[in-house]
Image (cartoon, rainbow, N blue to C red; front, side, top):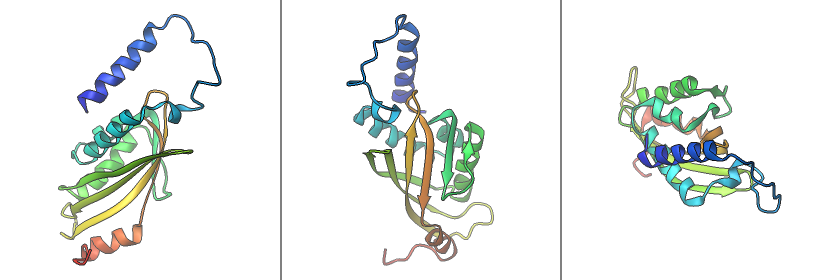
Length: 174
């Protein structure tokens, strides 16, 4: 877990606990959803730290970036809901690619929320692996929770190209 993010989360929790009077509702200045409330610099740090969690070989670190009832969907599959299920998805990739590195290519905020663009590189040397190198890029579209973590992640990458690389490796021309 990133020390900066843990400190930020603690500050948010403590500020919320110390607020004895409800804030006045001003529809002109309040964000319409949690996606609008995130500071762009904090969101960039969050994305960088999230990529590092995927590279950590510690699946529970990935799950930390999700709300307790958050969900992760990969390529329109069945959503993994909750920390244990999200950690299992992360473990699947980590086991297949013991040297996996996930890099944040960009984090773009649009009208539907943040889009985390990433590239995964690694060698498929885990159990039943092919020992082929893989480099695949994708995107996760996030809906953020009020606590600043991911509520919903809808992730996509080119599954056919991924499978091709598992079987034959990355093209040297790439």
